[in-house]
Amino acid sequence: GQQVMQIPQYQHVQEGEDFTTYCNSSTTLSNIQWYKQRPGGHPVFLIQLVKSGEVKKQKRLTFQFGEAKKNSSLHITATQTTDVGTYFCAGTSNTGKLIFGQGTTLQVKP
Amino acid sequence: NAGVTQTPKFQVLKTGQSMTLQCAQDMNHNSMYWYRQDPGMGLRLIYYSASEGTTDKGEVPNGYNVSRLNKREFSLRLESAAPSQTSVYFCASLRLGGSPLHFGNGTRLTVT
Image (cartoon, rainbow over the protein chains, first blue to last red):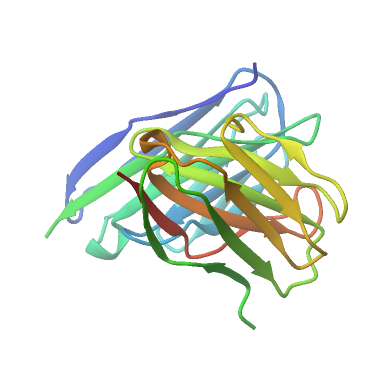
């Protein structure tokens, strides 16, 4: 079946270091969404990428959608303690099905 | 605007008991979803309702039933709870396919 694999599962960084999480799909996606879930909270929508090769930025966060629309990444520059949480990608297949990756949990040491 | 409201927030059940998780959205969204979240497993879709009057199974439907009561409300029922159903349950809604999901605050369920 269609899958979206996300790595790494966990990442511990020192405050100020960069962080990247990657998503790979077994099939071409029509779009990819990114969500952030704070500890004890619920997933909150961050951004959606639709176009092949698209890059979007939100302050220290950079999101990329691969040329083949099968992979995506989220990069955080100079992490802060407020970045702690679990980041999920979710890809929409060509049949309209939304498939979540397993998530990457980020811990930031002050 | 409340968004997506889930009740209850916490629940403890004994094996074999039944309960219904309630979800309501006030954003006039067409589609509604029930997910469960377990450590290391991400978000797994239990059931969804693409529009009022329709429901479909997701990837982990066994042991659950759903009802799309009207456009606003989508409930999840556990007829005979099992310890394997200990999890955090999230309801979510979206306006149209390809739109972002809006999640409720979750229900933390423990089955002993």
